[in-house]
Image (cartoon, rainbow, N blue to C red; front, side, top):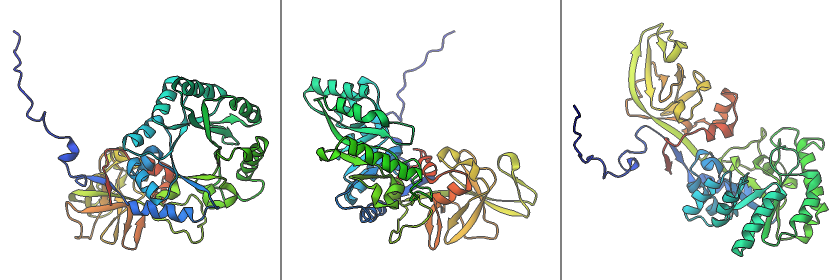
Length: 398
């Protein structure tokens, strides 16, 4: 017997999207301080050589900070250009009304993607003559020169023209009448290492190769071409690496990639990671906490459950190795970090209540927890910690 299904209208079908119904600070969230990004840019710009431009690198959703918001803050802070990793990232910014020049740092290789890049007025990174010819054909078809940047491999062994072939290739590229070379650049592989000012370091070898390359193509005859080499580490290291523009990512968000501090540079972390206390319980001595019972209580223990976990981007390697801040006090995280929750030991404290907000990254009075700390504790790097935060964490602008 076939059961008839009535065509009833879902009473929720006309509801607005979820973000209108749920407080973004209901569970766990990231706060982004726009003024910190602006100030960090102004500080870094004060270190640049005369007339050196600033590219704000906003790839990976602005290092987890929200690319659209970061881009607007960066422009306000004085950024001349923006850098993204993917075509989609660039399109998101264009659709948000951002008209600043945008360089796609990742490689594009299909005709379709180059055409999309052209239509959204994005500058692709070019690593081969083949890619140049595709861009030239597009420019010819649509009667508009295709703006792009040429990349050369000086030691990263990733993207870019072969160094020894570039001078010859550059001469061939010059015959392409429907492209506009806006930049020539390379990427430093180890500028954050302590020996980077040593003349035999890879950083100095790369700089010398890049300088020789520019000399060989007679770059002084092309004042319209912007040359750039330095990332955040190179930017803070020495003006000798600045050329016509620097590409700054990590330092814009408030962290130095160098182990030694740059004098007169006080960067402000722009990201705060916060979450709510959702439950409190007490357990007896010798009780296992979380999956695998990797943590066993040594006394009667009061636990607070925090509504954030590895699905939000907190690496499980941090389990039993970090602490959480609340009202100027630090509480150790205990047990394995789970997908959506983690536990902290609040034994002896009556200060924390259900519904309270705790700080995982950021400052609470004089106390501070940073992605740098987490990176050291999990054999990772600051970049990875920041970029790991997932989209289910709302970004709240402060």
